[in-house]
Image (cartoon, rainbow, N blue to C red):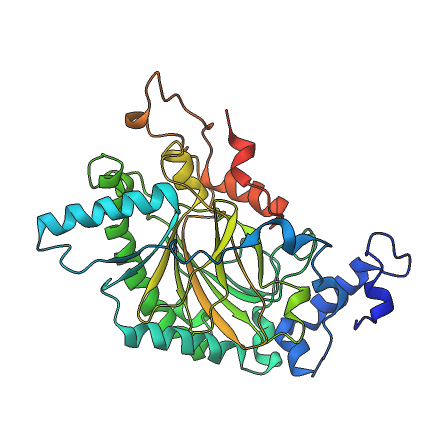
Length: 372
């Protein structure tokens, strides 16, 4: 699966000797993921990981120091009403412009954040024989591990492995979790759910709604935790850790380590989201953009591959994902008027996620399918 410079000069679509599907299957059948390639000592990445020609040049990387993703201090939120109004205003501004912000003094101890990152490393650094029992492409299973959920539908394969677990409303039996990260995964998820309730209160207020509105319509009902592992890459200029995409949920809470690589698209330029000690990254998901009728923005983002690694991150998605449901979500009626009619059709969370998963991380907005 290692390609030569001669092969590299030929696009995959025109090279008659390149059988992408066979290479994808061979990679998938190892059940060892990207980490397995690195452990094997490769010096050149397989062709399936190569970005399509010109992919990196779609948007420039910003060097503008006057713009940066907002960092919001939640300290004093509960006991100081004036401080709360200031925080709500900052959350509103960030959600309407960047779609991203970082939070500090959020109530989850740094020791818990560090142990969660360590737990992810422990899982991936086990022998393949132990990890492979969790390896599956069945996205409806409550617990799974694989490399690239859209391996067979994506235009290129990302330099990333992922462990996925649905933690709410119906969490797997604790015995089903990998022993090396079981306790911290359960503990961290509980703390993120509590934080999520607070964040949705603030977002409700930022929309001018009753503070409990978004919680009352069950935006916090589901929580899915994705534990990502990005091994060090010998040729980071040829691939990417996560293709440009937006998130198919209401809200995402991201814990990232010190390595960095997460970037957000703002005014058609890529901006780094630098790791802040003790901080969590918050981003608006597609479903929150839909129900806010575009008041809040679900913004595209990506993760770069890096020679340094492994990079680990934990992304907590507030969504019931593929859980069967008849509950419809559309633009919130209190936000609509003759001047601001609905921009989106109603959908269930499951139907939205099925559409998103079918198209994969193709760099196209999943919301377009649901526009009025």
